[in-house]
Length: 280
Length: 227
Image (tube, rainbow over all chains, first blue to last red; front, side):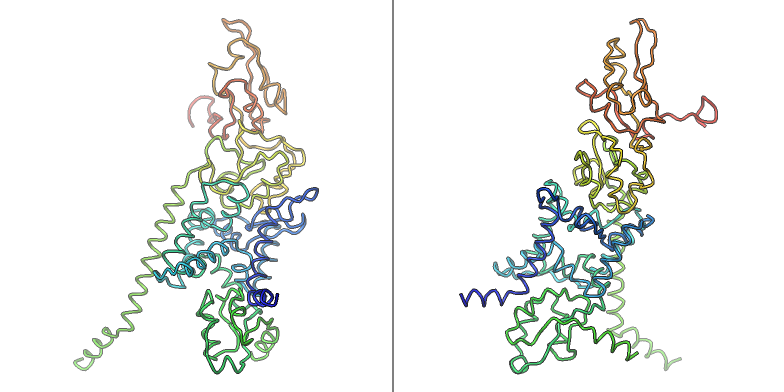
């Protein structure tokens, strides 16, 4: 019993995250008798509980670049989503909402299990260029350029409407992550993550370190080893900063699960917001 | 002058500078290749096929393509489940909603739930009267197989039309086969819902909904002549 409890505790962030992720995915799929679905549409725009309209700001931005005027319901929905991520943390979307994360995490897990070492190194800034390219092509082509590829909404479309033809891209993405390049998609290529990273650059939810004896003395760095974006933890481990400030951090909590010293915690840093202002 | 020269060489030989330039050119290269590939992808994507009809209130094709965000809310709110979001192999740009009249025509709901569901205005919410919808126009494309042209009074297209006697009328003409009743579409009242196409008794419909620019002629300033 104790063992199961401990194991659950060791994976508390992962389990919570998966629950949220799958719950959101199911909300779009499961049809409750005499109520209908909790959420209609897909992650580009959705209607929750028949009332709340939410819209993905990145997709709306592409639409704007493509030359469309922005309609009110979509704009309000995008503002709600945008301000949520801007306040807390942009890439919360990546680790807590995005269904592709399930796929790429599985690829990474398999990669470790199968001990695949081969790795094509990609630049982390590549996704910013893809982001710029997506917006530029939307402007030039008059269409939502990224939506021709976007595996996130495709995942939902293919899953909800059970068509197979588009599932090829998802397969390719999975194999690429598995065999070619470690965490290639989410960590290096996806412009949606890049967009949310920029949007939530100053998000208040932060992984914060409180130095403990264990952490100080043995310098285990296990948190860095499990982090999908290891560069964000580097300044914390080397004790340059107290909390992770990079917009690339997805707040997935893998480091918190891994840290057995209790040195890391997820904190809502509202004070930082005030002091920053006071400092200026 | 003589003193400056070695300094210039030192500047050029600065390895950090070289690295910066190399990186810059690399990035320009990536951007160039990326935009060429992306642009050609966009240009070569399949256009909407004539048989793929847009939901009522849809903006003209180009505008629709930029303002539809492929969310599928219209699809889910269609009470008759006739709308689909296009997948890769489908006859419309990926992710956009369409229906095929021969499979399931638009039922022309009075409250137009699909238009109400659209968050972006790709389906124009100012369209409140479904009879003003313009999904295309029905055209009697085949005079050889249409039963009414053969002298049999099938007239199914006229009978099923939701705007009967306005969008399709039966016009009598005299021919060597006797008196024929010719189904005649009136483009100003036809909404392109596709009910006639769906119910045409032939194995391939003789009456089909086409996009207006394919289905209609246009007289110029003169009644005859191109301009």
